[in-house]
Image (cartoon, rainbow, N blue to C red; front, side):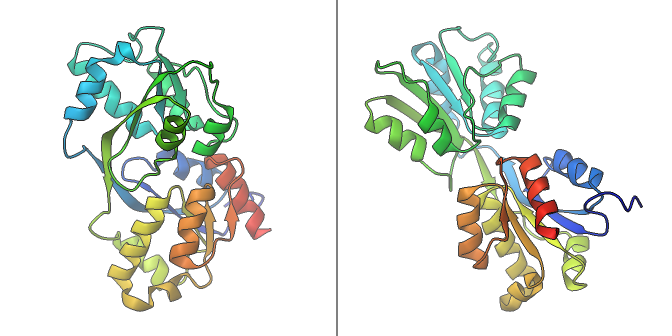
Length: 264
């Protein structure tokens, strides 16, 4: 054990999608934390692919495609391949915007570097800084099927843009909490819990209630609650009546800094 690391002796629960916890696990472990995973999202297909497939078959008619998550990127790339295309092979007249560093990195991996990434990794920042050309544009927004915000479509629609918003994936709650994670809460050995989206907050509350019953909030009484951004913080306030620290910037590195700061 390296006693000089900032999170040495701290146990952190990280809530993310199943199979998407590797990067966060590495970042916090490197800072000295003992990390416990709490998969709070199961990513799957939407109920119907037809709306997305139809939009992608007319991709040349769009001016922009806006991605707010790597899940949306992966779904679009998967469906494009069925049409014999990829994001990298798209017409260069189609520009790409990405909300967040991780989403932008995934696009770069697919040789489709985004044309625009907002300075803050939230939808509100994208709206504020979006490079409007002054002309009416047609925008495609692949998004989660349920539970996500519609602020992008609503805002762009109000200023005269033609917006096509389609479900590209769905995120559901896992059936149960891993037993080792439950034991950590039972033993009061958890120091902080990390939330990366509003849905991870809602699903975690559901998993806690299912595992511990109506008094589940007592298991979080001494646990620091950390949020990745404003909308996630609102969910924390609704579900837990508090949030101890919000990340700035709104990404994993920001969460790490927030975690270190809250314990200092």
